[in-house]
Length: 231
Length: 265
Image (tube, rainbow over all chains, first blue to last red):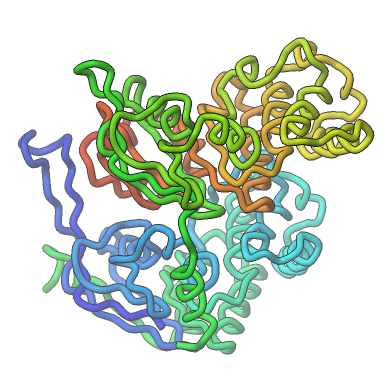
C-alpha cells in the first residue's frame, strides 16, 4: 500500500551558504521500505535522523529529490498537486503533532471537515465526529469551542479524531500518544489496532516504546538512510 | 490495490480544467506586468497567488478577470476563448458564471443601495424579475453570510467592514458563479473578523464546488484557504505547487525568503 524505492531528500538553502548556489544539505538517501495493508510499521532512530521528514515526503508535504513514493498506486514524488489532494482526501490519513485550523471554528466542525470534503452530509459528518470525540473523552462542553485554545492533550485528541474519522486505507501517525494520559492513550491504541484490523497500512513514529510494542508489527530504523549518521 | 483507490485517479483523468491559462503576458511599455504565466484550475480548486507589492499578481488577476487585455497568451474558461470573446458576452459571463470580490467592499458594492438591493441587482442582471423571489433569495444569502435578515433594507454604509465584505461575497455568489476571483478579500479586516470570513469562504468553496483564484500577500490566509499556490516575483511565476509543500519546503530562493520573513505571533 505504501512503497518507497530509493528515495532521497535534500534541502537547498538559497539565502545561506556561499551566496551563489546556496547550501545543499542531503538529509535522506536510499530510502526503500514497504507497508502492506493491515500492517503497522514504526519508524525509529534518534531525533534528527529524519523520521518526520520521511513522513512528510510520503504525505507530499516535502518534495523528494529522487526515487518513487507509491501510495495506493500514486507516485507522490511525481504526482500533480491535484492528485495529491485527492490522495489525502480519500486514501492517505495523517495525524500530525500540530493542529492547524481556521481560528474560531468549532471543534466538532474541525473534526467533521474531512468527511464534508468527501461529500458526506453535514448531519452525518457531525454525528460521526461527536461519536469519536466522546470516545476520546473530550468533554462535550468543548465541542462548540475552537480547539486553538485547548491544552496540548486536548488538541492532540482533536487531531487524532480528524485522522480517524474516515477509514483511510493508508495512515501516517506522528507521535499519536505523545501528550496523552493513560486512559486516552488506551483509546488511541485501540483506534490504531482497529484501523490495522480493517486493513489500513500504517506508518508511525512512536517514542512511547510500550505503545510501539503493542500496535506495531515491526520497526524500521531510519538511521541507515541518513547521510552522515549511517554506521 | 482495490477498485476504490483506482477510481479516484480515473475520475480525475476525465475532468476538464475550468480555467486554462497559457503563456499569459502583459507589458506596460517596456515594463513587465506579468510574463509567461501558465496554469490549469479545476472545479472546486482554490489557487492562491502570493508575492510582494509589484510582483504582478494583481495584473495577472485583472487579465484573468478581463479587466485588462493581455498582450500575449491564451485564457480559456470552460473551453471558451476569453480573449477573442466579444465584449457583451464577456460581460454576461462576468456577472453570471464568474465573480470578482474586491479588497475594498466599496469597489464591489453600491453603497447607496440597500443590502437586499445589492444582492438583487446582480440577480436582475441575469434576468430575474419576480420581486418576491428576488427578496427571498437576498434574505437567504444574507443568512448564509451571517448578516441578520432584519438589515436587508439598510445601506452597506451603515455596516461594519466585516459585514460589508460578507455582503460583497453574497452579492457575488448569488448568481451561482463557477469561478470567483478574489483580490485580498480579508485585507484590511480585524483578525477576528478575518477568521470568521475565512471559515465562511472555506464552507462556500466546499459546499458550492467553487473554483477560486485568490490574490493575497498573506501567507496564513493562503495556507488555510488555497489548495495550490503560485509565487510571483517581478512578473514571473517563480514557484508553484501544493500550498503546504510550497510553504513548508520552498524550492526557490525568493519563496524561502518570503516564508522565513513571516513574523511569528
